[in-house]
Length: 164
Image 1 (tube, rainbow, N blue to C red):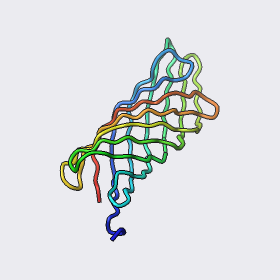
Image 2 (image 1 turned 45 degrees about the horizontal axis):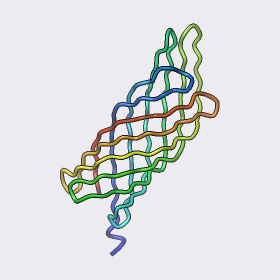
Image 3 (image 1 turned 135 degrees about the vertical axis):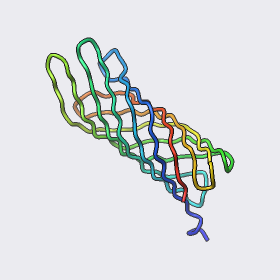
Image 4 (image 1 turned 120 degrees about the vertical axis):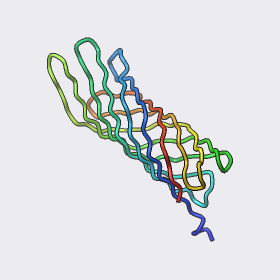
């Protein structure tokens, strides 16, 4: 009976991202596209997820432009609460990210780096049908790189999900 009560969810979402890039006075802004696969044991309130995505951020300060393209991959545990049609959740994020960094100005510098990605978030799930839902969430995470700039990455996302 327990084997039949396992649930999986897939969510595709996107939204607005902004970041405080280390050693700059301006915030970078851009967009994010994200995919999430979750396993929900016995349809309970705890879910275990694997998330992957793409984040594009740029910031201009004077005659210098910083561009960051990040690919975060992380474990996303989630605690859900609420009724059948409307559920709220809080989640964690712990993993890594690969980043393409480019600084344009008098001299153009670019490199590829990787580092830690960790944080958390909160959101809602609104079920349209038993197996289709709309997702809305906010996530904040620390994105570090081994040699280059670190910073807080913020994202407000919306998307659609499927439960099977």
